[in-house]
Length: 317
Image (cartoon, rainbow, N blue to C red):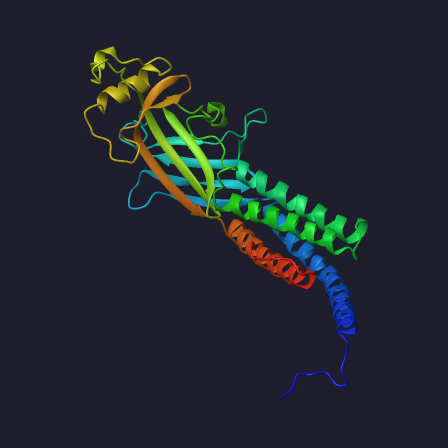
């Protein structure tokens, strides 16, 4: 079958027709993208609602696998933990007299510090920024300016990718301080958290991840790389009860990935005696991450379509 145009068209006229067709196609796509932006806004608002501090919050069960080391629950309200009751049964943390577990209860006092999940704060900030971008693109920008729309779509795409990364655990640039760099205020709990216990909450794969560690003072190292004797160890900052617990369990080897590391915690060198890791799935966070993934794909498709019509290379998408 012939693909020749009849009657014949000159190269100049053919170029004009191609430009005219491309211009009409671009005009149609820019108009269609306004509907896409409206749909994106609705999806972003759904994500924001899932992460909003709405009463009564999300109560999540905490339970260690195949052991009784940790049992309890916490209640998340937006990016804050407002309630919690956890029972610990660890060899290096003897329970109070007459009890069979060590209890950690989130303080209900109005003046008590709050556990804040920075990754959720980051996610909400990025989602709100996306909503601002959508509004600016639809109402204050030039809807017929392809370069402007392309730039706004890229900004949306980048922000949504970062928001999704925060719910997955955080990119390298998003990851906050570690458990030993930014210890939790002991007054978050009532009674206060013992000095030899580290309580660290974070987000991983849209789930709440809790690490509880019991600590012991690390022995100073001699010039021959041989640890000094137990009697020369520094226990500054640990109570008599905590030092006694360390002494009673001193001969028991620790079995976890941090057993042979030394950390600087609250101004002194420590080792991790016992470590418990508990993961609790959060339905609201899972739903929010799934919606962000769908929005990310939608924007990527819109960017690719716009780049094709504009004649740009979209291999980086």
